[in-house]
Length: 81
Length: 81
Image 1 (cartoon, helix red, strand yellow):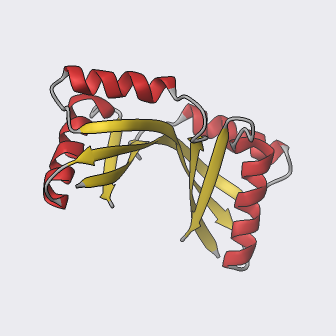
Image 2 (cartoon, helix red, strand yellow; image 1 turned 90 degrees about the vertical axis):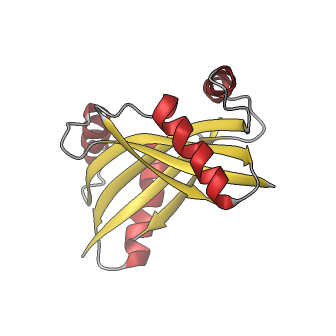
Image 3 (cartoon, rainbow over the protein chains, first blue to last red; image 1 turned 180 degrees about the vertical axis):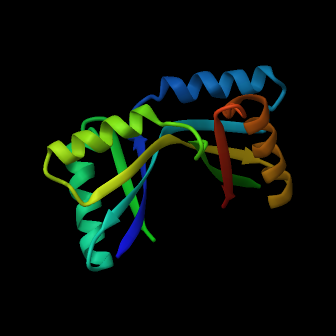
């Protein structure tokens, strides 16, 4: 079966996110004052051929640990569909 | 009230995604052959001060149109919590 994984890789809460901060300030300059605390990470979608949802989750988790996220700076979450 | 918006900005399906393609090939090199069709976009979280969920969605949508997505190359989706 083919499963689709949706992976969010976000900068750790404890760390500054300069990209998010820049967007935050620019949105304020554009007049959207109601928005704050912008944080920007990666959204990754991929397709996984696996026998079960658990297997698919395992593949996605392995991919995150081996390549997709940097544990020093980022955290990730996976949703399998 | 403070709402949290989760925004995914992804490259259009019709377009090549070189970053996703590179990750796809690298995952194969690492021995994870089960994964295919990797696409990489942005995941943006932000907090919005608004009177209602509809207002919050409106602010997030305005932010997407004014700054966060490039309509030529990207599509976006918003979830308000």
